[in-house]
Structure formats: C-alpha cells, structure tokens
Length: 336
Image (cartoon, rainbow, N blue to C red; front, side, top):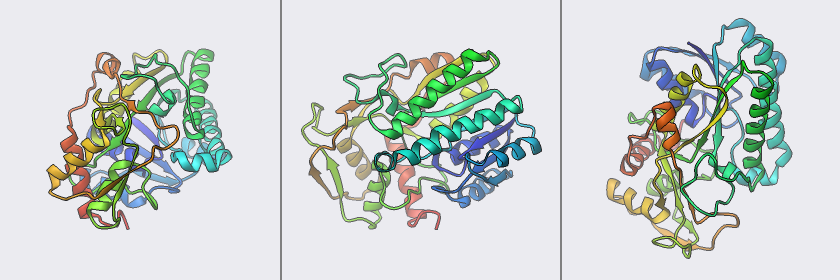
C-alpha cells in the first residue's frame, strides 16, 4: 500500500515507518520538523535499504497538503503529527488546539477531497484522565485533565462523528500508554528537545552523565513501593501495533479504539532497578513531592487489541532498558 505518515520523523513515527518499509509498503512522510529530526528518516532508509518520500510540511498548510495528495496516490494515512508535551500544553493551550485539532480537521478535509478515508490515529492514554482504578479498558471513563489530553479526546470525538456521517470512513484510534526503548540497532530512538518530559530518556541521560540525578515525583502512593505505576511499552511493539491496525482497517467499521500497552504496571523504582541491573549503571535519584494530577496507577487492558487486531507485546522491561541505553550510548547527543 501507499501510506502517508504524518509526523513520521518523530520517535514513534520513525519506528513505524521502519516496520512499514520492511513489510513492503511505500511511504510518504509529512513532517514540519518542529520536534523531530530528518536524520531519523535517513537512518531508517539505511536500516531498511529502502527510501521514503519526504515533504517538510505543516498540517496548517492546506494548500501544501492538497498538492501532496494530488502528486501521490495515497491509500491510507497514519496520523502522528501533533504537539505532545503536557506542561507546554498548559502554558500554551491555543497553540496546542490549533496545531492538534485544527491541523487534524485540515487533514481530514484534504483526505475527503481526495477520497482517502482510512486512518490510523495516534491517540493516548491521557484520554482516561486521572483514573480511579486499573487496568483500563477501552470502555473506561474518558476525562482529559490537561490541554494536550483534551486535544486527543476532541480528535477522537471528531473521528467518531465523521465516521457516523460517512460510512466510507474507517478509523483506528490507538491509545498508547508509555512508549520507551529504541530500535535494537541503536540507530534510531527517542531524542527529546531540552529537558526530557518522560522517565526513560531522563534515566538514560543521567546514566550517560548529561544530568546529575533523577527526581522521582511522589513516594507515598498506594503502590508496592510508594512510587507511581505505569504501563511501559517498547516502541517497536507499539510500531507493529500500527501495522496490525492498518491491516485490520479492511474489516473495521466506523471509529474503533484500541489500548496499546503490555497490560502490566511497573513503578518508577522498578524501572530504575531494572535499568541498573541490565546496564550496570547506577542511577542517582531523589524522592520529591507528587506532581499535581498524576495518577497512582495506570496500566492497560490490551485484550481487545489481541483479540481484534491479533497484536500483543513481545518485549520485556529489560529489553526496553537495554535498547534505550544502547541508543543513548551510541547517540549521547541524540541525532545532533
């Protein structure tokens, strides 16, 4: 198939493109490079021995997208493009709504104009807000607690309304939990701009000496060691989930949500201890106050994706730590 991947130069996008190319698909990439690097795609091409078509383009540029669809015969779209930092979304809500929501509406309008109506959408477990209990199923209560999560939830509603209005539209809404790790080659991985917002890249930057110590937010949660529990998923497993969802669009009807997680929860201290065991590197950390809005426990029930998509995770927490460390040691300054 000919697949358009928006935001394809990013962390999850680049790993998904690698899997798409290895499966024989042709890929066109749209990315404005706001929070990603073209080097990631160059390395994907090296790893697969295949090329991608790249366009530096923003979802707010409707004319540019229309031209791209006119020049390429697109069968389906995998939509990653969007801003994703929770803290920044609180500071700049209009920036997030314009880029994530307006950008997606623009994309859908252009897809409609070119009769392309199959979409795999990059959603997030943030649509569950601050859940009272886990594991979370796709039928759990939806309640975003920040502008970033609200944009994902709003876009999910848009896709549901769109599919109800036009039965030709088929959309998979993939709710990610906590993507970590890197490709086993160490050639592509997570390259956050500035101070990492997520646990694993912060841990690896401490291990490589870029940062002095890790702050663990909260040590008095009702968990086995007092620290927050999350569902960490290897980015390669996550990427393969997109291919399964893409294949299943043939049988899909309307907009259907799927949790992509391991179904297991690991605490912050579990991650630190596993990382230390796998790498032999000591991670200095300090226990600090909880962050407002953080849930004690959040992990997935991913049985629907297993049953309907034929997908389940294969990588362990040890694999995630090992591959994240390989990426960091081979690329201490990321793609720079």
